[in-house]
Length: 223
Image (tube, rainbow, N blue to C red):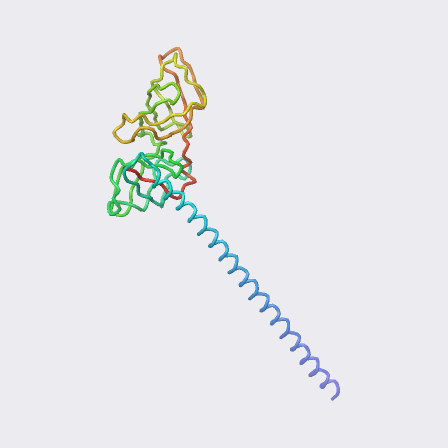
């Protein structure tokens, strides 16, 4: 009889201990979930702040630029391929006033490429890395005119600069204004490699573009 009573007491005590343990873990889990929600909120706030800073910088550029009469800000929705992309898709199109052959720049006003196809709400952009990209440019210091071509990823090829040129590594390359697509004076990149060849009258020059396309989220589309 006493043993049966003891077993009931042990059962009750065990039940109470189990209840306390379950309640403790439940409170702990709820606390972790609440902490996770707070962390997510903090991350979201940081993303919003970063986005607002980027948009403010872009708005300041839109006010100050004299290269274009009108600028449309587009958000990148697709990049192909991810590294050194040759094509970018943005979320602005005909309804936003985007047209074919409009110039596309980074928020730092570095050349990215031009619009090649436009739908109602999206536009395709051919970047400098594309093999079809050919741009008339000027070497800032020597004032020599050449053609900047894509296809030699991760660099661009600058052609038709004479072998007796005084061009140097580090010289800046800008748009010449002689192209049908780009106004004069857009910064494109800097020369990082120069090779001479006895088989040709021109230097073999490689240019590193200033725009880092794979890290962009917004672009400026100018007319």
